[in-house]
Length: 462
Ligand SMILES: NC(=O)c1ccc[n+]([C@@H]2O[C@H](COP(=O)([O-])OP(=O)(O)OC[C@H]3O[C@@H](n4cnc5c(N)ncnc54)[C@H](O)[C@@H]3O)[C@@H](O)[C@H]2O)c1
Image (tube, rainbow, N blue to C red; front, side, top):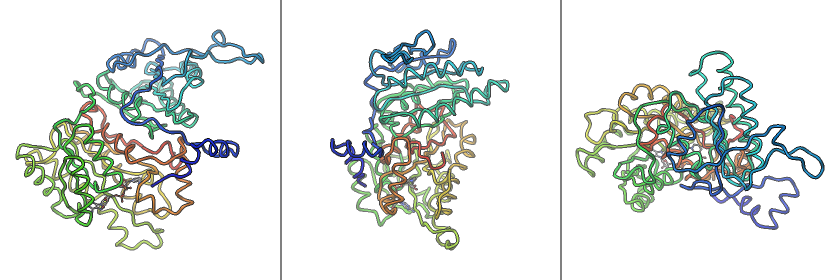
């Protein structure tokens, strides 16, 4: 769905007019597997070395972050104090606050952020590393770990020109375990992710991130005929996967087109069929050999049947809960059978697609919000149950993404949803797809039980 307003504001005349009226001016976002072109600064509280080790693993040469103190400040022509400025615009700041334990340490966080924000270039990145609040002892240390979230959520709202700020909360996490997440947050793949905390634990050895991490792996994507699902299929194929594209028989033609484009296979299947899980496994075993197993299943298929609850009958209620939640739980149960040919492999990935409606609720969407909040509950419940097999379970919660589904939203509501986020524009299917692919990456083995909002830091439910 085209966003004419964004196109308008990028023309010289449109920029002048919207700028003088104080209207939003959505930036063109850096996307894809691209690190910032400009320098990334690295700052740390105390002797913390996790960020430095991880950047070294990723081959990112960071410059030393500047610190804003009364001594380092300069004065401008009018005698006003200015924080120290970097020699050139920055591509990002990685701030290692894993050693922050006291309220006084938060002053160092401020002092590192201030000069970097002053010098940040377009599509810049702030990534703060902190510890999980439950992983530290003492009231002050826990409060400080939590305070980082408040800082990052606020900085996300202050970033300009398509910049993002995110927090990674670690607990016993190694540089290898952190690498895929730090890379994702620095690259253009996370263009529509801002103001979010991500938790990473520890699992031991994990592979290093690669440009095509799914080479030789089978990935099943439901609802793949169009919209976000087609975007997910494309990103997995780009990154080396063999994609099994699933959608209803009525979408047979576009489904075949997506599968052909990807060099994958199409499976016409209504996921609410009682034997849907078995049919997916049979397709995988039949097409790719009895010994083949699925690396990742992405539960993207979803529907809306919006009405105020006062007008919602059992059919509207049940159809949404069936497609968006019940069918997915049944499919997981079947594919998790370790004996089933074509089932999910150990070390595999389950990724759900929730929604910001499932976090904040939405007028006219009690059925949809129930199903999407249910996806979040299922992630939390299932992740620990399958962790011993190296399987991770996560979900994305997209905000406003430009698709046929949101194209049907009335004009005023659509414009509101598009602009009321920190990057002042709707996301694209590829933005959701990139986050899903990061969850599914073999290098993301230590990321489980997480729900990542891909919403440009939408004000809805923030
Ligand atoms: N577009 C957004 O802004 C947005 C925001 C939040 C969440 N989401 C979620 O993202 C997912 C994809 O959304 P979209 O905007 O691309 O929607 P879409 O309607 O464009 O595509 C959904 C696809 O799922 C398929 N599908 C529906 N029921 C199915 C069934 N029973 N079996 C198999 N396939 C089925 C449809 O045929 C369609 O191809 C959905 O789960 C949706 O709830 C979308």
